[in-house]
Length: 146
Image 1 (cartoon, rainbow, N blue to C red):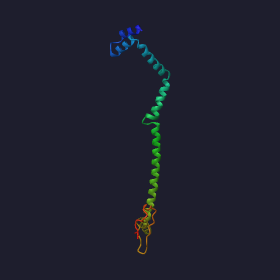
Image 2 (cartoon, rainbow, N blue to C red; image 1 turned 90 degrees about the vertical axis):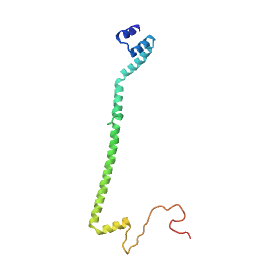
Image 3 (tube, rainbow, N blue to C red; image 1 turned 45 degrees about the vertical axis):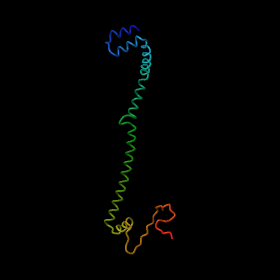
Image 4 (cartoon, one colour; image 1 turned 135 degrees about the horizontal axis):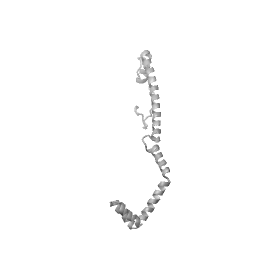
């Protein structure tokens, strides 16, 4: 013990950390610190490969910008975007066909005017049937109670 204290005094220049080590060594706390650090160093030296492998898996699998978790998220986003592209392509084909029909067939213009805008010819009557729910009141909205 005295040998260590003498070596610290001789070979290490006085610095705050050296003074701290010297006080530990002189007060017999050095043995307690050395036991704790010895256990830590023994644990780290025994399981160094396991620790490196676990840290590598954590970094590559979870923490990194190009991690497996993000790659899976990006794959789901790509699938969603491809489905959306297919939906818009089908809508484009339908609208293109409808525009082609409107340009070449005058009956198609009349059919769309009747379906969407409730237009009618002079000799026709239009009845609009709706599936909308009526209000909860017992009295209908457009009838008078007499």
